[in-house]
Length: 182
Image: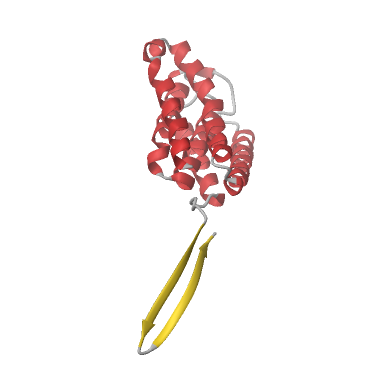
């Protein structure tokens, strides 16, 4: 199962690397960050479907909803102005919280090596928000913290179900055991 997931991650990484010359202009960088806002959480949720991981789907959904609620609640409550008079509700960065929530879900659920392209995409998204003058470093840091924190509230590591038969003996006694990992 994790092998097919690895293929999804490799395809995603290939797509991110195939168009490096398109990231030359500021507007293109901002657009790429906007695309990754949807691509990263979609890839994270799709991974649960590919692996037929119903528990992971539910954990992702709970973390995603808490992340969005916390992010937009803070935006409205604090109403911090954006840099260069580009509007209000800057703190925390919604793009950053959403992408880091998706990346940290993959990390927490399936392991760090599968999350590397997702963290790269989340980091690029954070950069795109600063580059577009929509956020400062504190907005980005807070967004990443809210996104990662929401994941750690609900997500547990993925374990494939399997059974194990155990046996031990000593002093003429025998013990037979059955172990099932959920």
